[in-house]
Length: 108
Image (cartoon, rainbow, N blue to C red; front, side):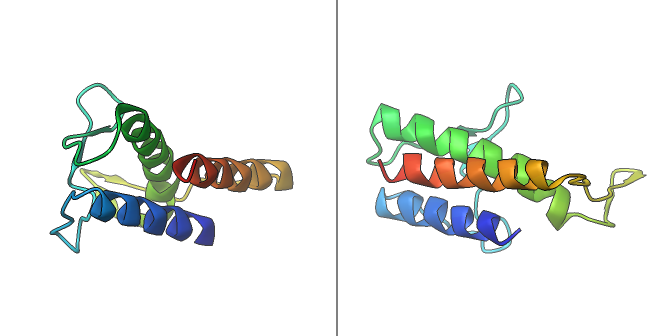
């Protein structure tokens, strides 16, 4: 979904602007970890606590949505990972609206 690339770009810009270095081009979001099922930012940089929380929520959403598209047909462990279906127009619109809301929150 192209909207996920936009969200990715916004996240990258915010991280870099806050002094969080993105070193690994293959896996640029290695600054996040998932200790409890929710992705958390390992570094704060110059982000306020509120902004850090917004970045974490946006990345968690991004990761959840994009992962099913990016790894289509790949083996993860011993299982073939298939694309998540979006069976209805309403569901597709819902994902797009949520991505737009995350982008708006990141700029607020």
